[in-house]
Image 1 (spheres, helix red, strand yellow):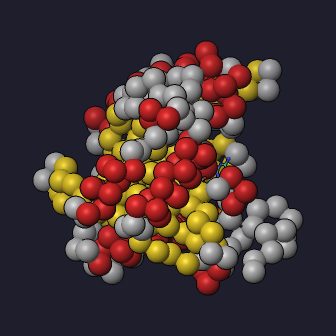
Image 2 (image 1 turned 45 degrees about the vertical axis):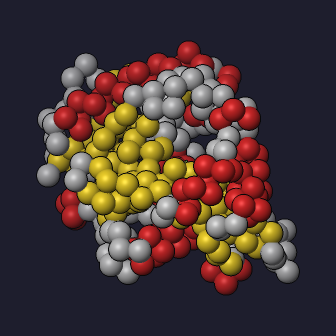
Length: 282
Ligand SMILES: CC(C)(COP(=O)(O)OP(=O)(O)OC[C@H]1O[C@@H](n2cnc3c(N)ncnc32)[C@H](O)[C@@H]1OP(=O)(O)O)[C@@H](O)C(=O)NCCC(=O)NCCS
């Protein structure tokens, strides 16, 4: 039995604490569906239909459950696909119970997903994430070693999820390159980056407790460019939606321009609950 109160702050799970299982039976898929409803807090119409999940896992999708003390506490779901000429798994959802956030479980789940996807013969996983969520930026780019060079506007429309409300649902498309055994391969562009490197694409001030972005009139002409991510973007979406929309539109324009010029987001320098993307050109 794991004592979830054994440390102050986030629980750090050890690899042996978690059992991973591929879920294929309808009862297990219902558990994942319940967890999806809990984590994303969306309306019933937006929850994945369980019969569709059955069809997808029968035809090659991977629903990976993470169990602790016999209870399902997280899952990662990916479907096979073909994008821009690359065979890949598209990871549609990764979620864990609230009380296990920052426990390391998200990282373990993704690494296990990578091993199992690679065992099926794929060396690429892609997924979307909100570029203004600093936890996800740190997790995806720093801990997992994924990169992003594609920006998609308002991907999920006006979603009913509590995690999406308040601003256009723009997303980075993260790409995870894997070796044949599922080990992540980091971008070679990281080689040229030292801590503190990069020309800022704007500056951030604090007003009434919120981060406010002031983008530079033109993007710097530099090999490494920094674009900031505010603190508490989820709270901003709820409590200061106009400011959240301003961040969305300001950074949308900059990311579009940078990706179109050949930059790739390869690193994230975290400062507490905010940070800066480092985008490098090839
Ligand atoms: C995304 C998710 C699966 C990650 O799981 P997790 O167990 O929290 O992830 P980990 O603990 O492995 O990694 C999170 C990292 O972010 C860090 N972190 C926490 N808050 C942060 C913040 N505000 N800014 C930057 N990093 C932060 C943690 O400290 C940890 O890094 P560390 O191990 O270097 O200390 C989980 O947060 C979740 O279920 N979120 C809701 C659903 C969602 O958004 N899913 C992703 C899109 S499908």
